[in-house]
Image (cartoon, rainbow, N blue to C red; front, side, top):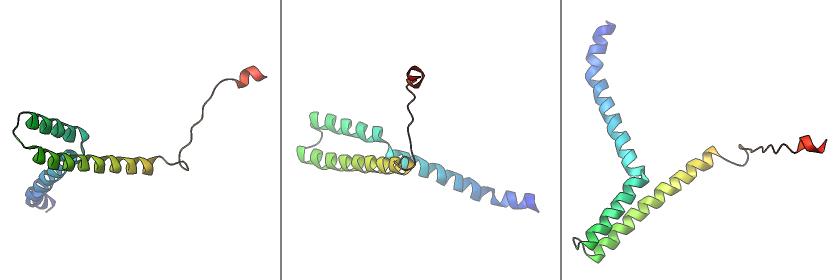
Amino acid sequence: MLLIDDILMLPVSGFKFVLGQIQQFAERELNDESVIKSQLLELQMRLELEEISEDEYKVDEAELFSRLRVIKQRQMEMLGKVHTAKSSSLVIDTGLDEYNE
C-alpha cells in the first residue's frame, strides 16, 4: 500500500519541487545586488545609446536604487539578528602577559 501511495503522490512531489526551485530562483533574482547593478549598467548604456529618454532613465534608475536599498536594509537586519553586542564577544590575545612576569 505504501508503494502505491508513493506512486500516486509522485506528480505532486515533482510539482512541489519545481515550484520550490522557481521560488528560490525568484528570491535570488530579487535579492542579488549584482543583478541590480548589472541592470543599472544596462540602463546607463541604453541611455547613452539613446534607446530610452532621460525621463525613462530617471524613473527606472530610481526603482533600481530603491530595490538596492531594500536589499541592503534586509542584509543589515540579518546581520543584526546574527551579531549583537550581547551575543558576541571578541578576545584578543596579545601575548604580553608572558613579558610582565
